[in-house]
Amino acid sequence: MAVIDLLDLPGALPPHTPVVGLDLGEKTIGVAVSDATRTVASPLDLIRKTKFTDDARALFKLMESRGATGVVIGLPVNMDGTEGPRCQSSRAFARNLLRLKDIPIAFWDERMSSMAINRVLIEEADVTRARRADLVDKMAAAWILQGALERLRALPE
Image 1: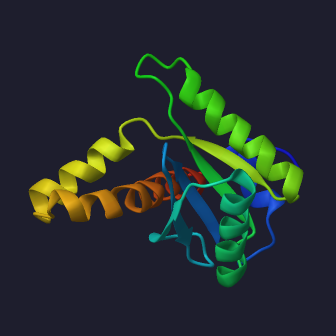
Image 2: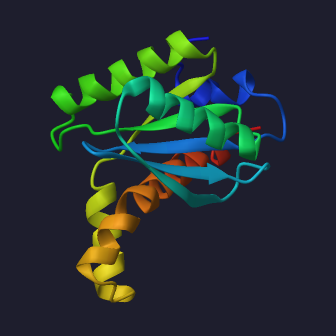
């Protein structure tokens, strides 16, 4: 398998299996998971980055525990639509995952996901700064995955 276009993701997956969404931070990987109908994304876990192989092993274990068969990775595109070093890093992460496991991977533009989540946590949930640090990445992963799922649902049948 390879990195594929998001619109091709459903055809690359077994029916009725969840997918995971990833928000790749500098120190953590936020992980979210969809339900089997790929309708709702929920925050799942936070992987604290160590070595890539250990991080990948932790991700694959989470995927296996939920029966997830595909991955949507947030792509941190610049506001002007260009791709910078963080996009290159996300693409390299996907390539390295594929060297370890043959799974469908797609990207979703994550512009402003962390900012939106921080706003929700501050303004609506009144969450403390310390607690926000633990929540932002996995909630951003859910935001990313939910956006991708909604885009897929908008496709004509």
